[in-house]
Amino acid sequence: MGLSATHLLLLLVVVVLLFGRNKISDLMGDVARGIKSFKKGLAEDDTPTVDTKVIDNSAPAAERDKTKAG
Image (cartoon, rainbow, N blue to C red; front, side):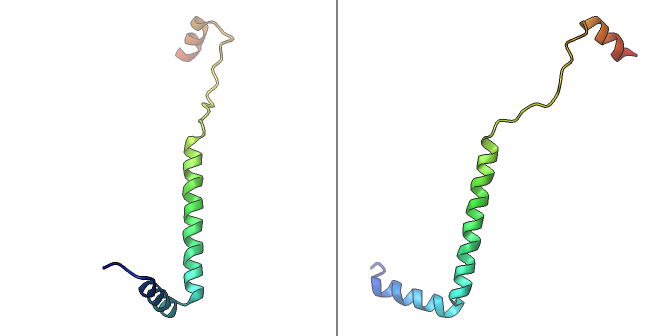
């Protein structure tokens, strides 16, 4: 006892009458934007992060410790 093609067509007609074509197309556009945003978020998570901390290795360790102490 599944849905036949006639049932699906009748259901589609009722949905279009209730919501209108413009409302359904706006809803589909919102869904598409949401999917694009989700994919963009996933792509941003995959990009490696670069540590911007710069380490100054020009001075010996003992001199760096003196400058930190005071």
